[in-house]
Image (cartoon, rainbow, N blue to C red; front, side, top):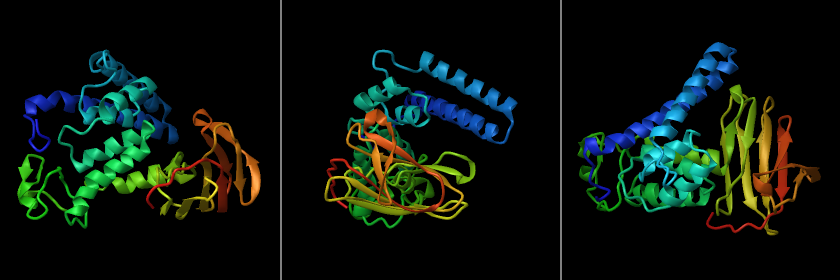
Length: 306
């Protein structure tokens, strides 16, 4: 079936149920984390127990044991990874059998955020960045100056608005300035700049630079303590230079790409030992207080377009 023809509700319902089940899993898991942070251990345990039950039911009734996936559609499989429900084995199977395949189904810009996030979690950020270029880039190539509620390939370059469909409406019902479609802005911050809070109130953050084929990247993440500013570039020696301005009141764990097994990072011109991670392809170093830092690691990069 063509991607621009919506499937009957009865046919899509099982896939929607799977994706919704995985969203519930994420909600209860994240709820348990939040409840522990505020000291409500009893409710946190209840939420964690419910998340465990949901995960067990998903594996029992929704996983295809022949393929290790949750069907052939991107949406439920992407949410299985994004929610943390899929383990390493399922993640690899989902990438190989589903997410790495050309998109066959109609997916909204909103839900495509979970697709690119799942690609990143599966270790394929460059493929996700290419999908952003193709999918959201398609809007730009048709003159978009904001994020559309809907987009499909093959739209005419002019007079496309009447052809758009979303939420069982079509044409001028469909918004051309839709906040829920702005996923790449979050994705670029989290997966290219690599900035993610790991403790309440941004007291601790993880910073994992990944140029994903780019020559350079820069930006910042607002926090209650002030903006976390970063700039990355590949150097002439094939390594990565990360400039980080960290506000006071924030601790950071910075994960730098390295040649496998190399655990030394230059921090403001001084060599420091780091903890190897991700099979020895990353070295993690802790920054205990705010300030201006320049980190350099050695690795053979293959930069692409800036």
